[in-house]
Image 1 (cartoon, rainbow, N blue to C red):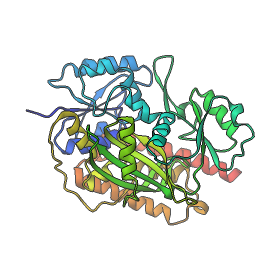
Image 2: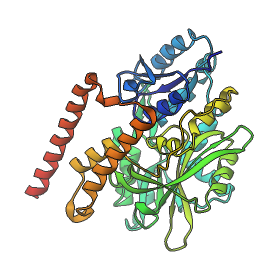
Image 3: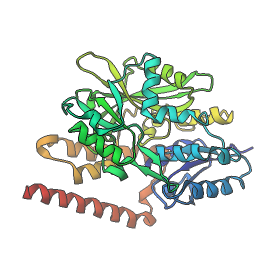
Length: 407
């Protein structure tokens, strides 16, 4: 009997990482979205044209359920971003009839992706967090000096009154947080329709960030984990990992398991901390109960977190076919192109970073090909997309360069 298939949504780089891990283990992977992206070009994936959940979660759920009802056994539903988690939670009753979720549902996800509830759970489980409080009116932040504080949304995505999903970036242009004057930043976050949190800015650079990636079983057992740190990020500041390296756990694993137990979560998650150089404490910043960009870093080094979550959800005992390698670093190929075109400044980042990014990105791409035999953009059908994306990045980079020269 064939194992249940996996349905990953929407199509993005995190979906590609999920497809490679599950597909290499012999699981049939479907990826759905309004347009074909990187995952849809993987040899492991069958791409399904689906309505855009950002425009209408109801239309998306109707189409997904119609497809799921035709399958011989319930597929396993994997979200590749928080917007997908929100859509799946909203339409839990319809989806539960034809899909398996690799995490508890409904209600638990909100305790993680809503930072207000996450930080409350952290305090109950004695996990350190930066000083934080919710701001309901910009006047509450009046007079607070900008040094040492930042304002962030409690959620990075929200359901809209029109039935779709809006991201914090769409509403404000910012990624994860807004620095500067707290009153102005609070006004911007609230005007975008997001709950605002005033939070102590933990000093130090991104090199003080540590992520613990883990999978927890239904009974709270730790199934596997690895720890990683960012060496660079994109966009700056508050971006995703540009260079990520596996490191030894600095003693955070027990806190992570305790925190997930407090909120009642099982499945895959990556939990981010930042070390406070003054106290030496690691303080909780964020948690992501979904797939992410550099998931293959763990997979190639022998940590098959997503496959473990799949097995836990389905009761299967599928073993990875992929042999562990000595891979200890991951460099984002797309992120490197975007960073060099948009953000790189020799005076700030140094002359050694560009060759490091280029070599690292090539090694990551080659390592993925060697491990998964999944060439992706080598296929001629993908060349127009690659050319268009590269041209767009170069145009944006040229505009930034001209702007800096005029300034």
